[in-house]
Amino acid sequence: MTSAAVPRPAGSHFGYRFSLVGIAAFAVILAWVIVSLFAPILIPHPVGEIVGSDYFEPISGDAWLGTDYLGRDMLSRVLMGARYTVGISLAAVVIACLSGISLGMTAAASGGLVDMFLSRFLDAMSSIPSKLFGLVVVAAVGSSIPVLILTLAVIYIPGAYRFSRALAVNVNTMDFMTVARTRGEGTLYLIGAEILPNIIRPVLADLGLRFVFIVLLLSGLSFLGLGLQPPYADWGALVRENIGGLPFAAPAVIVPSLAIASLTISVNLLIDNLPHKIRDRNA
Amino acid sequence: MNTLIATLILHRLAIAIITLLIVSFAVFFATSLLPGDTATILLGQAATPEAVAGLREAMHLNDPAILRFLRWILGLFQGDLGTSYANKMPVAALVGGRFVNTLKLAGITTLVSLPLALTLGITAAMLRGTLYDRIVTVLSIGVISIPEFMVATTAVLLFAVYLRWLPALSLANNVHSFADAVRIYAMPVITLTFVVSAQMIRMTRAAVIETLDTAYVEMARLKGASRGRLVLKHALPNALGPIVNAVALSLSYLIGGVIIVETIFNYPGIAKLMVDAVATRDLPLIQSCAMIFCLGYLILITAADIVAIVSNPRLR
Image (cartoon, rainbow over the protein chains, first blue to last red):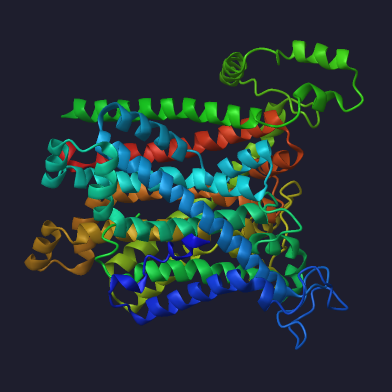
């Protein structure tokens, strides 16, 4: 989890001022990250333990968020679910953005055939609707955690590629690039030392948006029963297993949905409230 | 100049066809990664090795993958979608009725969401910065930021659990009257309308605002044109291209939405068929459904691009 700080491009070390909404959103995200790191210490009951005498119990002093369809403590399950939703999405977004951005910068710096081939291929990839891609892959290779992470990453590589390539193409026309080329620098140096520092901020803001898409897609797949498999449960899977409680408006089905919404809306709000210097382009 | 537009459109169509080929390639190979031998799956665990070998031969499973791919593609062109593994029926027969159901759902959603979203998007752009605009914007961002199933569960909670107006399930097969139809389609359509409209409102608002910021609209304003005239006469005709583009793009969100909505409301459409096929690993069915969805998606985004090309005044 060394990459934990990455999707919060807001990192105060940039030294910008934030609006109140931005700070509140950041606090919510930080809270979920802390929860996902320390969930095993925080949960009041073991996730598998049946605490209630009844299923779909409402909120009570013993089970703060009620119980699920088997009578397990919902609070513990949501806190543990944060681990999977945040962890898997974070891993996927880091892989997607690292590969997408490297490919994008390579395409921009190399130009010609490399650029054309990469762009054509990745454009075609992005013409597969994301949920459909997920469905097909899950049908083909099953849905273990590594497969899920890789699938989610692959789905969002084209977007990250297109975004960073567009930015890198602009940098590529700058004089300092010509100077570096004339000096005889290799592509690797051009990418790492000349292009990357110039596009890193919008690219990090874009990474946050892509994190939201991945959380939504992962939850959607898990909701369809094609994402994380029992005994693990992310927030989407929690909604699925407790969907039977919907007619009684059980907290078990509402709370995980609210957890997803709190995370995705906070990331969106944080990015919207970033200083314009950081996000000078929208995805 | 018109040859330029024609060239651009042809170029875009060519890209769409190449993309479709790459996509079909990807779908075919992703599904052929499936562990387990097709012949063994078809014949069951108890089959003799000879029977399995015979079926492999008969189904051309020993051929190189590229040959099987070509045969599959040619079959698709001739309308032969293969045979389902699960119930040995032709895929075309399974898909047919389901496809019509999904089209109905998508069609009704479009009819509802188009006027709604355009009205909200355009009025929000006209009243930019007002409380009304801010409410519309925040609500649409909110809907975009939450998963589709949450929109659906919220709709069920509101309309079926608290208000008790509508049933929570859709069974499109026993429609006897108009009232039945309304009750059945209401919930899926409401959910999909929210998902699609949110996108459409955002994009329409952005498109109209962009036109309202141009110099010629400013000129009209300085001449003293009323706000209504400004928008209807000067801004809208020029924003039409971007708006149609936005509409086509937003409709492509139907595809993601329909997968969730058909599952949650048990609606007998093609997306539900595909999700079930994934659960039973019914390969030919998955491939066909995937191709239908990709084709629909590709048509929508290509249409969006072509509208953008045709409506670009710089190319006229």
